Image (cartoon, rainbow, N blue to C red; front, top):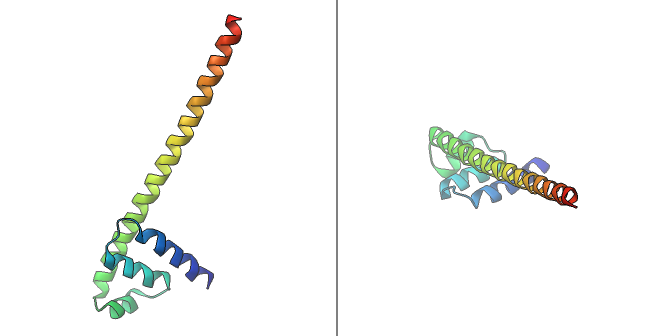
Length: 97
């Protein structure tokens, strides 16, 4: 049950991004633990189409994850650069005194 809850939360957060309505539906069924065949039957689409939607979902997830990682990396570098600049300014002020 915990895995389904996690899957549903993932589906909810992913559906806010750039997923189509159909991709959101597929993701919801995936989160419930349904197979591609079961999803296809439920949505009246072929298993191949389900696989295509799953690939699109995974691509969107990777793109979103990579974007978040880059943002975190930039923030860390910004914090580190600010700390270095503060340290250099403090050292320069002590040297001048």
